[in-house]
Amino acid sequence: MSTVTIDWRRCRGHGVCAAALQEMVTLDEWGYPVMPDPTVSDDLVVAARMAQATCPAAALRVRS
Image (cartoon, rainbow, N blue to C red; front, top):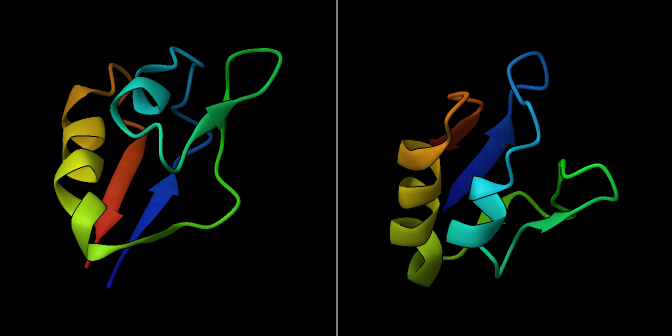
């Protein structure tokens, strides 16, 4: 099982992670990600890695 973490020092609220991983991430009123459960199910690992790769601030990490 994988998990997603957000480096809050890097995150700038671009919202790309929510677009790539909409099953897990929503945005708050300022555009910052909200992720109640950081556990990534096996069927979402590819989407989570896409969100990590496309984050303009390199704030998202997927760990196995």
